[in-house]
Image (cartoon, rainbow, N blue to C red):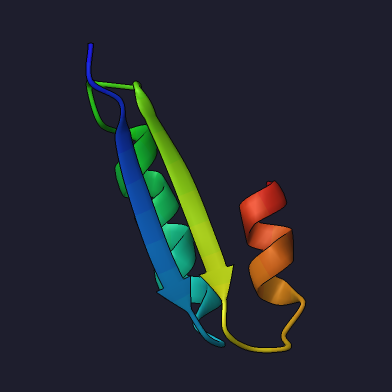
Amino acid sequence: MLKISIITVTRSRPQLLARAIGSLKAQTSQDFEWIVVNDGEDTATEQIVRY
């Protein structure tokens, strides 16, 4: 089966990143890899991704 790669670039938008995570978790297919690129220096983004 084909694995899907999702790349998200974010910068100081933790609320929208949390929303994106919720959307990905709700997908019926779980065969994907998700790459998050933090283009800022905030720590909230890292905390949300680790959650």
